[in-house]
Length: 270
Image 1 (cartoon, rainbow, N blue to C red):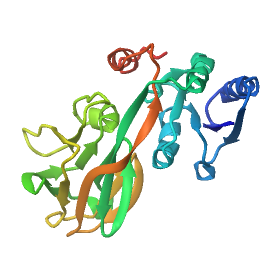
Image 2: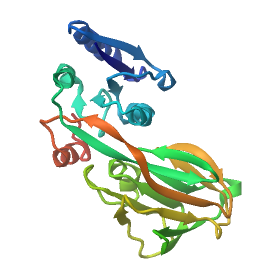
Image 3: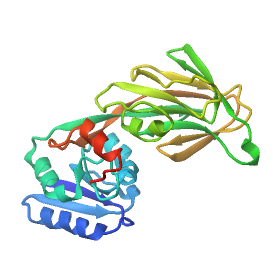
Image 4: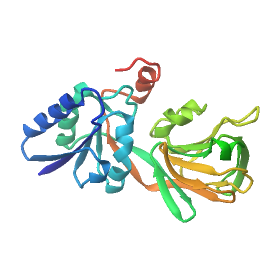
């Protein structure tokens, strides 16, 4: 018996019809069971996880699926859906591919961040950011090193460490380059750095990046995939490396990364 999990964003317009399409197709297949859930905390062991929604929907459950080794069938029912391999008209195709047992996958690296004895993860990126408001009127000052080799001291709004998956997200908006998902590297991207020349740096995912907050004059917020995880005080140290697990996405054979870049990132949405 093959078990599917279906996680969907109930706020997505018209999501009901796509959920029913998935349920109807799974009901028609022999030796298949499934469970539908809305809350990421209700995640349960299954053979495949179907996500219905946009990129935010995927990010809500991708880390849990990655830690459990469960392949994700990401169906875009939102607007851009850059992380999704399948569009809403491909639902039956995606499930049939999974059930065939012969499907290509994309392994997406995850970034691990440790500070103050706590560990957090991000599929897209981790971000060290200045805190705005009365208590955060100053720029951050963040010293960066890779494999204990000093890289630079960044003064500005903060820094991003992006995975190839996240290179098309916040890092791209901050001036970072695009990394294909099969590149085994991370990217260090400064955010609104107060200097004439600040170029993003691509480094091996086998390296360890460290960030020193001893010179900053304000607290610094740590975000993972856009979610606030911790507020760091002056003197904190942040260590970033590749996680021991990766997210597994079942890949759509009929599309390629560069075509997706051309379509999705130029406003010509599917």
